[in-house]
Image 1 (cartoon, rainbow, N blue to C red):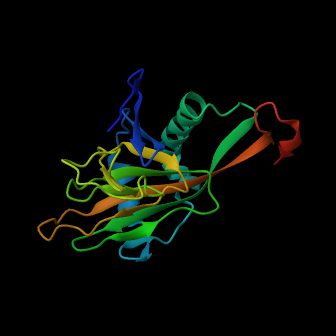
Image 2: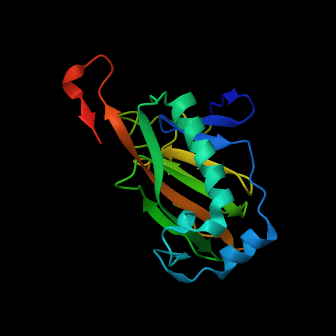
Length: 211
C-alpha cells in the first residue's frame, strides 16, 4: 500500500490506481450525535439496513458532522486532485448504514456523483470496506508471493471511528459479510457530491462548460 502524509491531516491510499483519501483528523461524536443516529428510522437495503432519510447532512442536528465532512472534501479536491477554485464540490445525498451480524453490502459504485465518502460512526474491525480495481492489470495472472495494492484486484481499507474515506464515485466497493462472532453494529455515514462552476480541460478552450 502506498501512503503519503500531508501535514498529518490525511493519507492517500493507492487503491486500484485511484487516490483514496483517508483522514487522520478524527471527529469526536457527542452523546447527542449518537442518540440522534440511533433514533433515525431504518429501512431494509441490499444486505443491510439504511436510514429512511437520505439527506442526513441537511439536518441542523448534524451540522458539526457536515462541517467536518466538507472540510475534508475541500482538502481532498484542492490538495490532491488539484481542482480549481472555479469549481465547487458540494454534498448532495447522505444516509446512514447499519450492519449487524451476517449482514453485508453489495458491490457497487455511486452514479450521479463526483466524489463519494464513508464516515465511520461505529466501526467493527471484522468488517472493513473492500475496494476493487476497475480493470485487470495483466492479461495473465502469475503466481504471487503475497498480495498488495499493486497486484491484487481487491483491497481492504480500515478506518477509525470518527474517520472517513473519500474516493472517486466510480470506484467499486462493498462491505463483506460480518464474521459470525461479531456482535457490534457497524454504523457508517455515506454521502455523494456533485460539482459546479466553470469547466474546461487544461489549456483547451473547446471544452468549456458552465454548470
